Amino acid sequence: MFKNNYSSKLLEDAVESLSTLPGIGRKSALRLALNFLKEDEANVERFAESIVKFRKEIKYCPICNMITDDGTCPVCDDEKRDSSIVCVVESQRDVLSIENTGEYNGLYHVLGGIISPIDGIGPSDLTIDKLVERVANGGINEIVMALSTSMEGETTAFYLYRKLAQYDVKISTIARGVGFGDDLEYTDELTLGKSIVNRQPFAI
Image 1 (tube, helix red, strand yellow):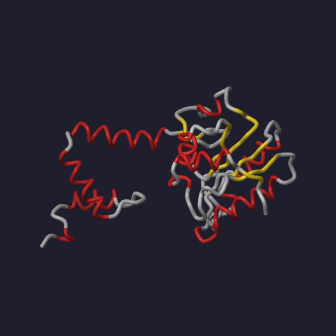
Image 2: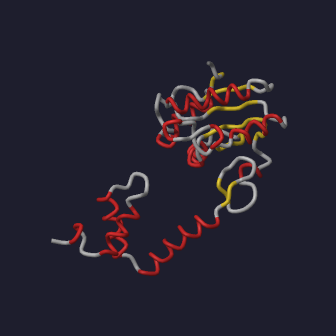
Image 3: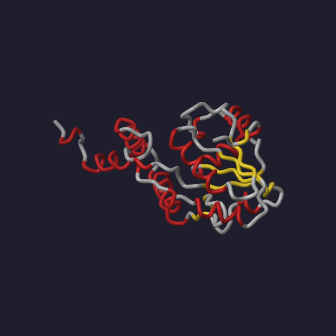
């Protein structure tokens, strides 16, 4: 009988590390770890180096908080985008999901999460103040709330509405093509695209 069901401490450590990734259980982690043994060593080294380099050198856009290699992100730099519309999302992956629809041509603001007291995440942990500052500086006519339709997402949207209500800016939300409790990441592109195009005024 192998100790801890593994024949190797190195294998066990690799499985432990891989299983910390979202959506990766121990069986999947074991399969991935063993797959690395079949790969050319140079390929595995490039894989590991790319992850380490990404973690160490990635930067965040000072305007919208999107990940970027250096300075402001390509969306904020694109003069062809409609800078009067800002779509507020929870995470960087939501930006990628919306961009893949091809239905939106405005700018973004990445909150870095949503308000969730049970997880210890409050307004001060998000980039809400930076969003309010962007609106206060003028030039933004519409804020599109593209947050998850979970209770936490709805709470965050309501909080943002209260913070932005004092400014002369239209506040809308994505249409309910996205079902209650759904994350944008798992919504198909056609549905998400139509939800953006058919956005509605935010109602409390």
